[in-house]
Amino acid sequence: SEQVEKYLCGEMVRLIQEGRDVVMDFSFWNRQSRDTYRGLIQRHGAVSQLVYLKAGKDVLRRRLKKRNQTLHANSPFVITDKILDHHYKNFQEPVGEGELVLIQR
View 1 (cartoon, rainbow, N blue to C red):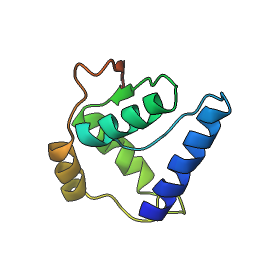
View 2 (cartoon, helix red, strand yellow; view 1 turned 180 degrees about the vertical axis):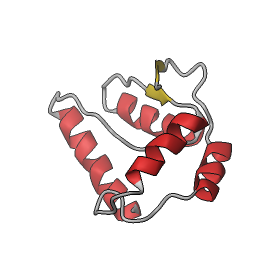
View 3 (cartoon, rainbow, N blue to C red; view 1 turned 90 degrees about the vertical axis):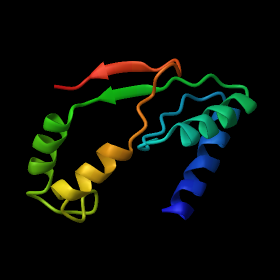
View 4 (cartoon, rainbow, N blue to C red; view 1 turned 90 degrees about the horizontal axis):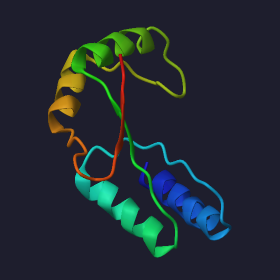
């Protein structure tokens, strides 16, 4: 995953330098990773916009139940309640980062 992220980051920079719009769809679960990307984007002369798809644990659990029914390349393993609890507990919610919050139901 580190190699893929490095490649995608390079592509992001290349597209920014071409004046193109770019959407990065990573979890960005912690403030440090969001700050790193925001700084990289700004250093290359672009403006970043953080879009936060805010979902409560019940919404996530319902979506994972459906996701876990079909395993394929984009969802190769089951996300258990234990895994969800771990990630939910460690997620650093964006606050005061200029985020656009879209409430998921």
